[in-house]
Image (tube, rainbow, N blue to C red; front, side, top):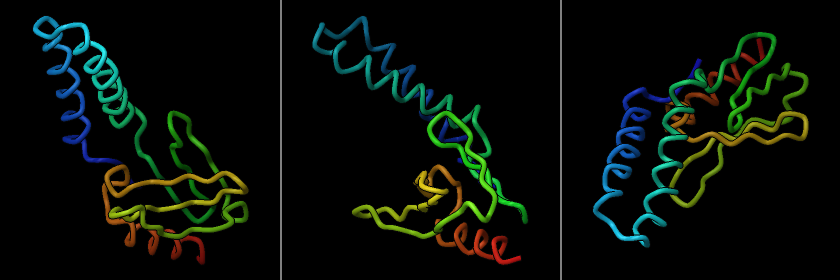
Length: 125
């Protein structure tokens, strides 16, 4: 069972609150910049707090949160598990019968390589 650190989710919610608190002291252009960033930070923080765990796995298969919905797949439906690198960040890529889910180390709350090794062990057993 993998989930993001709660402190990170609370930090995102705190950022959203600070940005919204700045609204009275900025001009209209500032609103255009602050509102979307505050909404995205708040939505991401709420998602990380409410939709946990992000990834669970057992001998039958796995369940993963993709955006705001949970996708479940049995091991026969898992086409590929691998790590990829996006510029500087390692990512876990799950190919679930044509549906690809990509998760970062921050979203998993654990190093991507360790999560992949654990998933491969469960998949074999």
